[in-house]
Image (cartoon, rainbow, N blue to C red; front, top):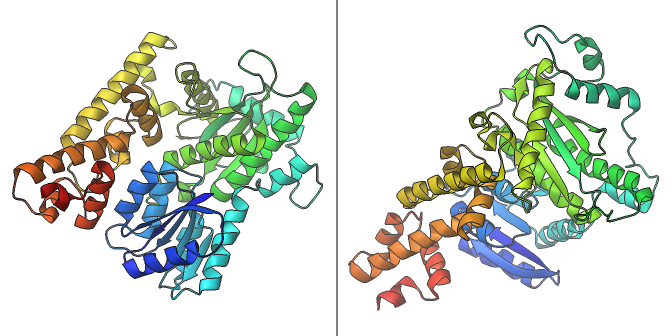
Length: 443
C-alpha cells in the first residue's frame, strides 16, 4: 500500500484529486493533502511518503523547490508535477529533478489516474537494466562490464600519488580519450556487504560476480539520470565511481553538488538493498579541480567510510562531515563519540534559539554546524531520541500552548510567533500533536 501526498494551494483541487485517488481502486494506503510547500515538507519529514503530487506555483515555495527539498530528505520519493503553464523551462527543470510526469491543468481524470498508476506500478520493479541482470536476460538494457583496458587505468588513477600536483598529469591525454575530462572531480566508493557480520557469506561464492554486476547496473542506471560519471570495479570487489563536471556545469547557479552526491549515495544504498537484499556502505569525497588530485579524493572516500565503525546503522558517509584536521591519525571511538556529541549539542543550541524563525530548514541548521543535513539528522536522532524536525515541532508546540493558555493572542498571531506561514497549517500540526485544536484548548 502506497502513501500519497497531494499539494496545491487551491483546497478544491486537493479535495478533488484526493477523491479521485480514493475511488481509483489503486493500492493506496493514506492520502494526505497540504496547502503549501512548507506544510508538505512537514509531512515528508515526519510521514512515510511514496508519491508526491504537487502544483508548481504555490506562493512562498514552488513545487520545484518542494521537490528538491523532498529529494534531499528522501531521495526515493517519486513526484508528479501539475501546472497551469505549458512552459518548457518548468517542464525541463521538473524532469531534471526526476519528476515522473508533468501534467497540465485542467487535469483530465483518466490521464491523471493513468499517470499515478504508471508511477506506482514501477515502484516495486527493479530498474530496467537490473531486471535484465537478475532474470538472466539478454535484452536491450543489458550492459557491458567495464573492460580491463578502462577498469585498470581508472583504478591506477585512484591509487597513484602525484609527486608534483601543480604539473599537468602525465597521462592526461589518455584519460581524455576515454572521456575523463573534468576538470572538477569527486570519488564515490560503494563497499558491498559480500560477507555477513559473522564472516559468513550471505550467498554462495558463485553468486558474487552476479551481485557485483547487478549492483554496477543499479548504480549506472541511477547515475545516468543525475551525473556524468564512470563506474568500475575496484580490486577489493567494491565499486568505484569517478564523477566529473565541466567548467560550465560546475558554474551552474543553485546547484548544490555535495547534496546531489549524497542523494545519489542514499539512492544507491536504498535500491541495492531493495532489489538485491544486500547492504552496502557508501563513501563520498569532496570535489577538487584537477586530474592530479583524484588520488586524494580516493583516500577521502576511504576515510569517510571509517565512520561506519562508529555508526553501524548509518550507510552514506561524506568526508566533509568530519573534522579530520583535528586528528594526527585516524580517530579512536572515544574521539568519534566526542565529535558527534559536539555536533548535536551545537545543533540543539541553534534550534532552541531559532525555532520560531519562519522558513527554518534542516539544511540551514546543518550548514551552521558544517555537516550535511542527512548526517546531522541521523546523529540527532541517535543522540537525543528525537527526529530533528520533530524536535523543532516540539519546541513550537510547547511555546504555542503556553501562549494560548497565558495570553490573549489570536490564533494567527501565535502561528506567526512560532514560525508557521499560515494559521491553518499551524492548527493542523497543533491538533496532530495535542489531539485537540488550538481553539478547543483555549476554551
